[in-house]
Every structure is written in structure tokens, then in C-alpha cells.
Length: 482
Image (cartoon, rainbow, N blue to C red):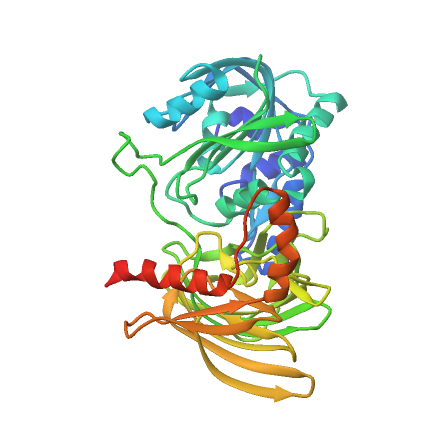
């Protein structure tokens, strides 16, 4: 680190810089889940340190697919965070004159750029930029600057705050969470996240994330009446060289599900409650942070680890929010390729009752899964109102009446990615021949009657005995597996 950086204007800045990557005072201690959750909030709300600033002139920063040229301007760091006893500088704000160059070695990604930007490579000027990063990027930026005479002002702090807020707009936590993950682990490659609005361009996010399957990604702000969000334009693996080799990168999920043991209750009003005990196998990197997916109409109430300890989590709180991601902050790292267990308690309305019929809206998203699903086995115990047929994926292995409800048990012994269920005033029909693929159809005549007028109004014809048509179609289709 350069001597001039060590000679900051205040003793406080001197201490921050001196221990930023060197360790700190006392022995390092692993942060627990609550501390990591607090650090997440600190990253999301960090303010700009307006003094001192660094002057950059003809400085460059290269990352896969991206070159940033800081032609002339000033840069200042965001407030650092402390992780595992070490002070970490993770972000910076630049204002001045610069250029952003981006391209991809893949023809398919170049075609994406042409579709959205009318060119297969970007070369755009910019006047301000927010960067979040890991140690390697900090050192590259720091080594190319010199101590500036002028500090930033309140207006610069406000601009930096707005750019940071844009990364978590509408309670989108992904970008900040990935930043924290990069700071807590020891990735083989550096982490870099850029928020910039170049000249004659919508707002862009560039991210190089060693924890992603495709490490390189580019988003642009899609903004039309009634719609405003960041849409991904490009994504490719860091070591990809052609459109054939390694185009999809390597799977790097922190957790892969292995087995589910789920207790479900569904009231006659459609309220769904579940307790899911899940065995996961950790990925090759392990760690203390993980992302799972859950239907947006379900609210997580508690998460515990295999020893009954509470696990910090962050999910979607507003019912209008369509987010599906659940973020876990664990007390201790999970070893690579190890098996760990969690218990999830959650509830919501995913099987709405209407005039005696249930409309199940969750598909296979009614239980927490890794974002990149793997095949798992399942044991299900489902308590549902009497008077309604209930069917789930797998084999039914038990049925017991309990008051005005029925408890059914189901098992899936052959690992599968998606498990779903249906409930309603349905009749069960069996179809098939002596072949090895029997077919069961659960059919609601009343629902068919209700849908008839709507289908006819749209020019669609409906026949009688739809259960027979569907069953015979499935039987014939299964012949291809003989």
C-alpha cells in the first residue's frame, strides 16, 4: 500500500486503511449469522467518506469482458465494514470523465448486444460510477491514484447514496447479498459490481461474481410505462472462449437439496401451513450464506439448523412483492461437500378456495429449494379438509381420518426436481392396459362445467368425458418409453 494513503488527513482514516486488508486488532473471529445480517444492512446503507479522495488520471480496471478507463476524476471509498474481525473496504464512488468498454467472446452474446444497443461491443463515456468489490479490485484502484487536495461534498455523498440504493431498489437484495458473499469467502477470482449510466444509454449493472455459474453478467434498466426493472442482457463464463466450450459455466450453488420431510396442513379457507425438514449437501465452496427460492405468496416464519439453533434469514415481507428469494445467514461455515439440515416453518395462501373449488397457484414452489434445483427424495404428510380429494406427486402410503380432516402420506423414492399437489371435489379414474405405465386422472366435473362457457366464448370447443380423453392421450404418449 502506498505511503501517501497511509498518511490520511485524520487518524481515524489512517487506522481504517492500515487494517483494511491486513487483519485488525486481536485475533480474527468468525462472524455469526446475526452479525452477517447486520453487515448486509451496513453494506446496503453505507455512506461515502468524502475526505480524503483519490485523484485518478488515465487509470484502468480490467475484468472479464469489461475495461474501465478513468481518464480524469476523483474517487472516494464507502464506509468500510468489519467481517471476521477484519475491516473491509468494499465500495467506491468515482466522478469525473471515463469510458466503459464491454464485449463478449461469444457470438450469441454479441447478438444480444446488437439487439439492445445496435453494436456488438460497448464503448460509452460516463461521468459517475459506483463500484463494489473484493480485495483485489481495491488494491488495483488504490495503486493507481494519488491523494487529492479537494474533498468531495454533500452532493457527491447524495449521488453515491442514490447509486447504492439503485442496487436494492424495491427490496431487491441479490446484488448486496452477492457482495457480502464475496467478502466473507475466499473466492479464487475477484468480485466486481458496477452501477453506471453511460452516455446515450440506460442504466447498466456489470457484475463479475466468482460465485455465479456464469461469472460475467450485464443488466440494463428496462423502463416503460408500468414496468421498471433491471433485465439481464448478457451472461457468460469467465473462461469461455467459444460458443461451444463451457458456455454455461460450472454449477456453484452453495446448497443442493437431497431429501425433504414436510408436514402440510391446508384449511377449508385455503390457508396453507408447512414445516419442512430438509437435508442439503453443500457445494464445493461451502460458506455461511445461501439463497433459496420460495413462492412469493408464502411467508417464512422461522428457520432452524439441524441442532435447533435459530438461523437468520431475509425474505420478502410485502404481499405485493413478487420476489421468490430467501437469504440465509448461518452461524458457522458449512464445509464443502458436507450434509447439513434445516427446518423451515412457513405459511400463506397458495390454494385459494372459491365456490367450493380450490385453485392451487404454487406449482412446485411451495417448499424451499435452491435457486438451481437438484433432484431430491420426499416424504409428505398432508392434512386436508374432508370432502375434497387430495393428490400429490409420488406414491400414497397412508390415509387416516382425523375429525373433519384427512391425513394422507406420500413418498417419492426416485429423486425428482418438482413435486406438486392438487385438491378439490375431484373423482379418481384409472386408465391403462397391461403395460407398466398405469395412469390416474383426477377430474372435477363441476370445474369443467364452470369453464365451459368461458372456453366457448373464446371459440374453443369442449367435449364430454374429458377424463377419458386425457387418460387415453397419456396412455398413448407413454408408449414411447417402451
